[in-house]
Image 1 (tube, rainbow, N blue to C red):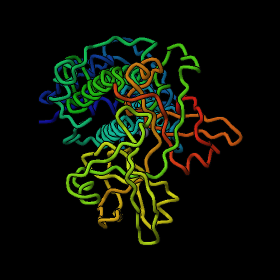
Image 2 (cartoon, rainbow, N blue to C red):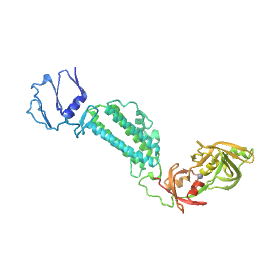
Image 3 (cartoon, rainbow, N blue to C red):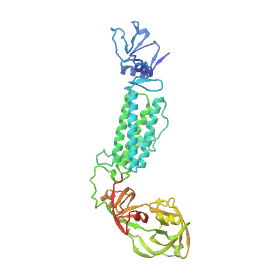
Image 4 (cartoon, helix red, strand yellow):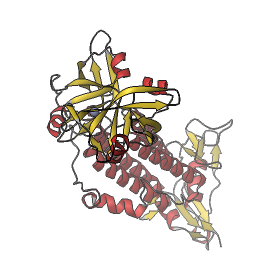
Length: 460
Ligand SMILES: [Zn+2]
């Protein structure tokens, strides 16, 4: 017993221009084939049902004549689909074996996949430009999944297992339905004054729906879904993009302060920060203060520094590395939980130590150094860094400037050697006072003396 499938009808219809099929009495017609025949007006005849013998088809070059049974022969003019030399311009390969016209719904679907991938790549490029690496990586996952869909369709293979933004299909569905429960975020309809990342994600989400519609046209026949695995993944891709949109609305992927669209520019005076130059210095733990200066010793206050509670102490130490020593290095109070030595890169080179660029308090990969007092030589492990330039702000300053904690900004410092500092880290705390801190190398590069002012700019 034979079976006539949707694929048989499709290739007959598109490749050979067949509008009518003759099948044996016991040939089984699949559900999809019935729907396809119905959609394209294809007539299926069973041999014993046919009263009039099938007339021979007249095939002319450039046209196919298909007389309808029981009716006056009617000429259907179609351009020859069988090329004399190579592939006709209006045809394309559905797969290695099947040639279809370019307006076949499955080719339209592949075109939409292609466009969507191109849109994603443009947004990924912008993410890298604006330092939103995390978002770029999420979107790169989406590109990978689109490529898998394309391959699965062309090769007619199952998609297999997948996750998106670290979530399974069921989790994506659940999280996108309850963003408040999982992310503490309420749904917000898109508006023009949202952050750019949110607007880009909203656009991508809308485009993912277009891909779903093209899929429906090609793969859903009546109530039958031909590729349920692809349908599910496309649905979850748009759920995932919606989750990312919700997260972006709340500023999660901001690379810099310019990522908020439609807001009036903050006056330059508000964006100004005083610049302070930090010379090499040491913060000590309580235990290390006692090792270096004796049991029960407390750092002696000499004068206050710009940040509330921070002070320069009377104590001084010598720093020693493999290549040299630096005497009379300032010790800043109060005591901290961990000892930290902040050097410029020039200092580090002179001492022969390799220091990583770190925010104060982050000692990952920090270098070993010897801290020397009159009483003791302390072999301090993993404590020397070059501090990243940063800006201290109170929450009120940050709000007025449209900035948030950990955001990266650029700062222009004018003068006889103007310099723009990039990737300056914003730090927000109620106890802070508005100051930018740079080290001596950076100050010399900009020819800054004791103090200067910088203007914070959107980083792009
Ligand atoms: Zn600082």
